[in-house]
Amino acid sequence: MTDSPNPTPEPSPAPSSNDADKKIIAGICGIIVGCFGVHKFVLGYNKEGGIMLGASLAGILLSCFVLPGLAPLAMGVIGLIEGIMYLTKTDEEFVATYITGNKPWF
Image 1 (cartoon, rainbow, N blue to C red):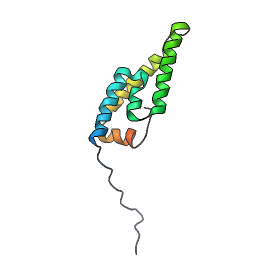
Image 2 (tube, rainbow, N blue to C red; image 1 turned 90 degrees about the horizontal axis):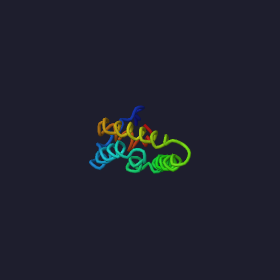
Image 3 (cartoon, rainbow, N blue to C red; image 1 turned 30 degrees about the vertical axis):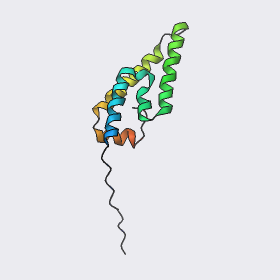
């Protein structure tokens, strides 16, 4: 009985069409309404989506009274960057990074 010191790794499963749909939907949502974190909710990152939504809403409310709306602007830029990153990755890279890798930010 000889055990191989380096077992053969199992091939990673091919991305499903559902994962590819998430890539496109999350990318478009990130570009259009990224400041509200919709793209995070699409990918199942509820905590991160809540942070973006809360920061944007708090920034909008405070901009009416005290501060300029920098938080919604910052969240919008983050959403735009992430949306572009989602759409420029291949399906395999997207699934490995954001679906199976659980990478919530950038």
